[in-house]
Image 1 (cartoon, rainbow, N blue to C red):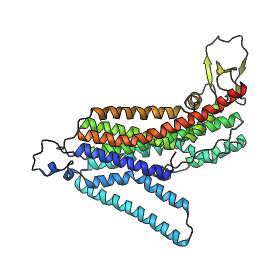
Image 2: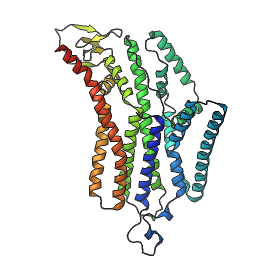
Image 3: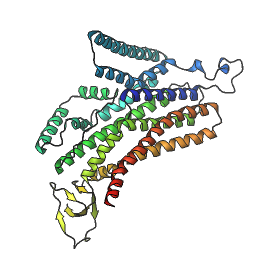
Image 4: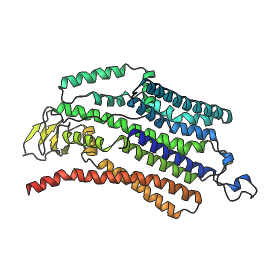
Length: 420
């Protein structure tokens, strides 16, 4: 996991490279232009590019980097009054500059384009607000930093009900401001894990981790789609009807940008430490396997109790069904599908990392194949530039996989050697 500022800078550079490639795909010159045409001497039709739109897209893509700069400067603090004044002035100048560029580009776009085209400028925010502002369950991730898993169950229930009542009392404007603020920077702290001994606390911890994981996945999906929309789709919406471009190649570039942004954001928002936390919680939760009626009729069976930590292999009855404990420790509700899904996803700590490696590796191999078969100069250039970015992402994933694979296999190997 990179630092917040470093990741936002690298992510912004990647999006700028992808935006530059999309403009090459759209505005490259074609062979049938006459020799005396102004564009025949250049690689791109620069006179057709809307620079106000390019500046607007750049500001929208830089929103997370700008907020990360402000956040890091605020965390550093001020050693003296002069340092404090310089810090406040720099923040004011940076925000004023971004706001002025945004307003300047919007005014010029309003003058030169139709209302239908202008609606595409803020479409992602229009979709995000109804999806996230009205679902207050996603705010449950805020409880994780306030939980102390070693306290008594009554204290946990009281704190959860109190925070839940406060969340319900929020009006639409506060939810809107909170949701929009999250779009600038997603520096959500990683929850802590203290190996609770009470089954109720374990299930409560799992519920909070599920809400936090769903919130992070929602942020990854939105920000990756947001990036792909402004980088690869929005420039297509402002192309003149008389302008020719390769639609299939541009759409393929859109898909590649979305996949790469998804992998990069997932790696940052779901780091190895967070996946290890989910793995430990899943190991404490356990899993139940539903058995057929009439099977194991001679084996001892128990009535499932929510206050018992069931060992592996025990048979219990719950809701008129027979279940067998599959994990080393089992406190999950046998009939709860969400508990079974949580255990399936996270009982193997490297499952998510392996999935990301598979996705990124498939993208790299496909791009290498496309690079070998490309015949046009813009295809070769775009694939080469994107591949450099993907090599870095794939290298980090493989490095983490090798290190974590050895780390998770070490305790088991050392235990086997000790037994032998």
